[in-house]
Length: 146
Image (cartoon, rainbow, N blue to C red; front, top):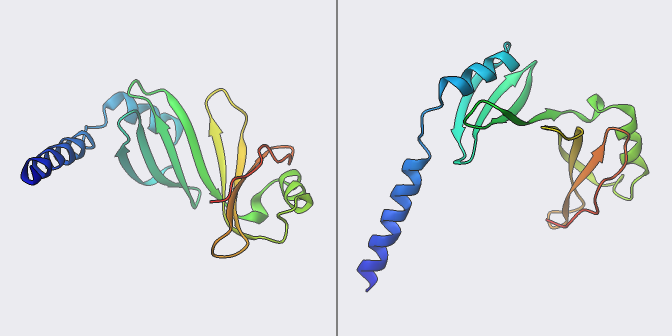
């Protein structure tokens, strides 16, 4: 029975790893090149439901996702706190998290949605949260401890 379980797990893992290696089609790469003609150091990842391009754009790490048909889904880009617009900085400074350590900031653009800013903060090694702000600096959701 143990050998049979190991065999099934091995087959499942092998099949899953094979699905990760679909070739990115030219429709997707053409859509990416049209959207980001100055992208540098591009690498692709197959997420099974979409393709993800990781690249540098203007000196900032960026991740963009596309459907198989080349439709853009979303883009996340690293930001420094000083590069946030003043409304988002003000919103953060007025929040109860203003004294928490800012670990990572991302600008997130999604198809048919307004841009949001995700600020990953921590109070200690144990208490960490993702804060989501809109472009006007309003905290969008009550964060969950990570």
